[in-house]
Length: 101
Image 1 (cartoon, rainbow, N blue to C red):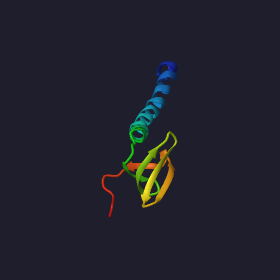
Image 2 (cartoon, rainbow, N blue to C red; image 1 turned 180 degrees about the horizontal axis):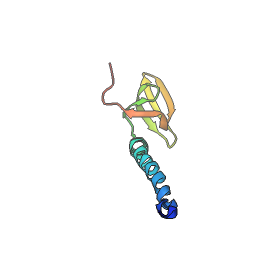
Image 3 (cartoon, rainbow, N blue to C red; image 1 turned 135 degrees about the vertical axis):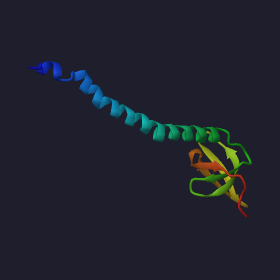
């Protein structure tokens, strides 16, 4: 008659059977979600640090403007003749390639 203790899998083997799939799911989630977000955030921070006077930018609200002044926490934009807006630096979404007519 076979020994039941010899046929039963060890607890560490059972633990590995459950942990390996969770580890793989976490790795896939990291590669699909966290890594691209981190890369995009670093690129956006580098763009904000590189802002300078006369850059054409677009805010997160869709406002096109020209940078007049860059402060540590804010940026002053000229959006039209005699119209200036001071926006938070993080509100700059991107540097525009060409301003629409």
